[in-house]
Length: 314
Image 1 (cartoon, rainbow, N blue to C red):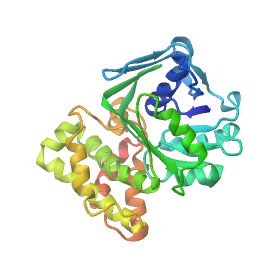
Image 2: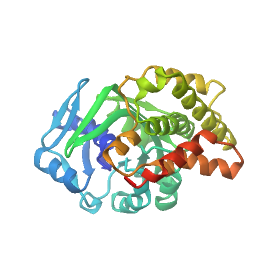
Image 3: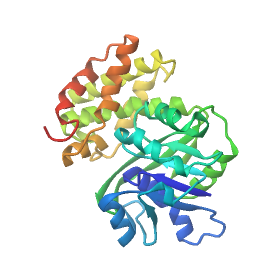
Image 4: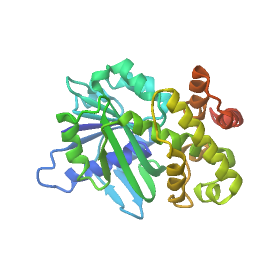
């Protein structure tokens, strides 16, 4: 199976590296060939020094990595892991065209709930699958991905809920790659479940400039976070996605299980002075809620307070 990772950042780079390690280790019958699409200094570092995963749980250094900045150099593949930042969705989807052949599956590992619609519009719904990644990882420096904690999981599925041969073949490889790999027969619900955690967690950690441990320890920030979760749950219900009556309780338990130092990727971007995914997280909550008449006062404050930083330092 030929796999292309579109966006070899913290998420795509981590999970792609784990699958590439099957081949690098010379595993008999690994049947996998992984290519990374990257750019700039990160690409140059990968070409020169390989790709390193800095992780207390499971460190890894791949010295020989297939990496390119032009998908046309890679050609058609069986699966694309689509893991670019949300603001690059449209352009990256267009760039994916040389990677497609009949039956190619593009699995989105992006944050938010809007990227799948863009991929379906640009590439065709028959090529698109959904996915979510659960991991705390950042690019520590070009060519180096730092993984915090032990959590490393991707969940994926066909949009129609079926387990197709192409999905089963990918799952067989992912299940051997050293991370938790899960099939979902209701991936859109799974995507919204993550969004119900991620949009509030990204917003509240970025708003307060504090990690998970502080957010859950301080009563006021904990309550703010849970109110933001409830707003997303009401929005999901308005879009005919039922997250269950216990969704707030489940996400509160998820917050309780995070390592205290865990930060959202949006907080990491804010601290680095980078662009934020705000318009596709709390901003999207506000926008989508306005269309269906659902009030979202917490996310409105988050979106407004962080708006000056959305494109970098004001």
